[in-house]
Image 1: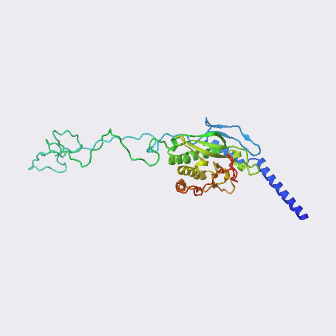
Image 2: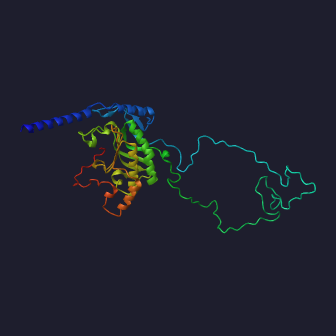
Image 3: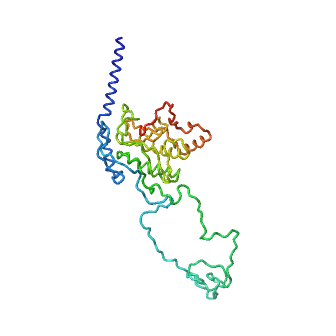
Length: 377
């Protein structure tokens, strides 16, 4: 009996200690590096205040939640650069033009100055001067020489090939690989709207700009030949624990250091959602897998459908700092080509979702798995 009471007391003390740790994690001070990272980002000019980026008042609490210089962001991506995909890059400035004098022309039948002409030999003019054509020669010095004798029209050789089309006929060039002519490069596409506007810290805004410009737009042009003009976000700054659990470790969303993206809208109006596209058409899977794989190279944490039941409908990215330096990318990234190939194979095997590497969303009311919380980690 006494031993049982002792074990109960030990268990109670452990629970109290755990609660105290959780309370300290929630109500302690924010790590100093967060403010330092915000200040360094703003001073670097990587993110500039403007109509699409506004600096808000500091968010202080509750507890550790907040940011010193939160930003209200309505667009992401680098500013546009004028140019096209198939233009040849030329150096800045005018290319100097040089004018050289024409080479000297030696008159026909003029003896070479290095030899003395034979006094017993009188040169006679050529019967067919080399510059002569059908009539008096009008060729300028150095012009191409004619092979026709004087007074004889130059014959026109017949060609075994059909005549070439006139210049006014329509011309069908060989199609180029990659984006067609007239489709701007990624740098000239413009910026991507964030709907609704997101409250974020400066460091992740800078990382999102690079990801959108260098990766998302490249994948969009590759799979759809259309740029992404809007992304739908379902959670930015939010003072909460991971997965919406107040007893869990505090989330990076609580510092404006994370973003959850649920859908991408293209210039032609097409919309790809993470929930349906992750196990949807081959091009949807290819695009989303390329987007996720690129995110794993730029962010500290990337969670997508298949990571757990809380992420079946969005891609979570954050810049969490871990003492071990470990990065988390779930599920394991694969190339868009591999995902699209699997999707094409799966169409020949109806009902086999496992081949796409994703999980079935809990649409059934009898499914024991919990539904995802929008914006949860």
